[in-house]
Image (cartoon, rainbow, N blue to C red; front, side):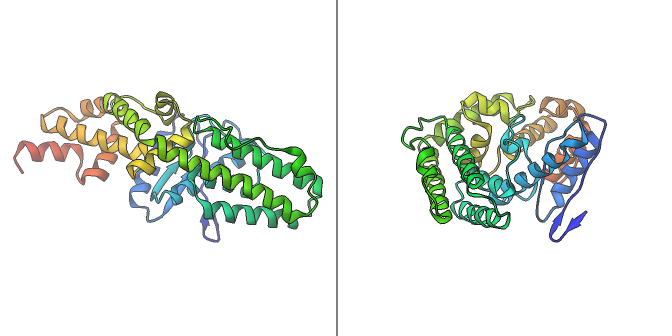
Length: 299
């Protein structure tokens, strides 16, 4: 379906994991000139709207991180991590901006959120509830760093409750969230090197296994969403692209030694032979078999 500049695809599948769908997306990501995002799979149609919101969120992450092709929500937020239900798209955009350290994006999201409350003609009590909810979510995002939050201070309900002017209430929220963004950015600068070095060693040892974002983040003691952004910030590419590149280099060495393609596929972590072949061709420019044969004949 097409809606303005947005193109939406809905996939209904009975097979888990949906290999054919996965292969199609891998192939599409290789030729995509722009970014696209995907949400999680849900067992019932009732989860379709949530999957759609996750796909939008994944797309925002991909665009901010300047990732072309496919961005999976599982690769930026973790397998099981989900935002609370009932958030508006403006509130979700504010959370993404906080995580990425995107100050301009946060300002836009808060401006859009303020305009939305006006359009909806929300009463002061409801506006107060929404602002408190977002202030607490801002603290939850800051908590993802794993550091002591006492410097940020607590959310003071009474302070907000005593305010009467809408502009004053939104200024209060903006100050809270910008303080959280600034604090988290400072923490990232201080701790990113040690965490990423530890993650790189882990990947180097376990590239042949199915290493998820969740597992890698737990190994270094960080929240998955926070870790995925930290990795990109430090390395310049996402953890999944780094892992893919590492696997392809190992695969090339194995193929040059004359090892069979299906054996190489399994050794570098791909049980799906077709998936491995697609990724190898996309990365190296030839199929694994062609690469091995060229090396054998000295071409």
